[in-house]
Image (cartoon, rainbow, N blue to C red; front, side, top):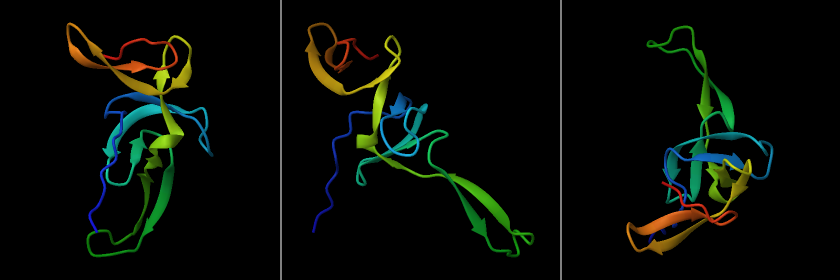
Length: 110
């Protein structure tokens, strides 16, 4: 069975707001986009602690803080004027070609 790659309109470096779940209302920068998993990793959101057993490299052991991915449906691009999450659409511009825009305000994204 072939793996499907999802079309994700949010890009690495975008500022997003979490729309639902435990981290609702938090904002952060997208660190990575996982198209095969339909998820995005957001800075400072969904941080979990993992315990590492002692080894030769780390004789003391360690507690690592990892940022885990969120479903892309739980986040929306931050509309800076309205301070709300917005969906993303595409439209054709006569000068620059295909451009992303915010569905809530119609403002183009650079």
